[in-house]
Image (cartoon, rainbow, N blue to C red; front, side, top):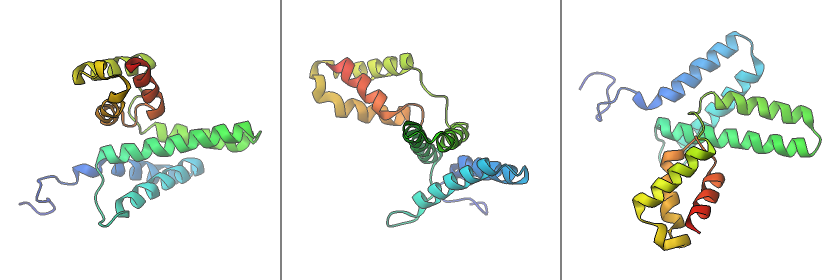
Length: 165
């Protein structure tokens, strides 16, 4: 085993996304970009909190980090909508700007057509069409890892319901 190499043979491959976020934070601090710096700090804090939550601290994979980023972006979009509805346009704009920064680090979102195709092929692969709504959990379970950070779970669930009924 080489120094700095874990027993699995990976040399910090898991933390690629986290390293990219840290590098972007450093760059935004040097550029004195307050909004970007504070947003990236919040995201990195959420990642650190996820790493130390539970019984044992763990290193997150890029998929885990993507999931956290997707969740943080969703929180910002929901907050922006709430502020917008309440007439607090300045706060809504700030939340939207934060969501846009986070979105830069997420994979390309799936279109409605791609979601429909993915749901259809998953139902077909699982042979779940004849089970109707009883197959909902099985289909969502198979889809979730494939859509992580690329589509809203509620939108995907609605499409699964539509195709199963």
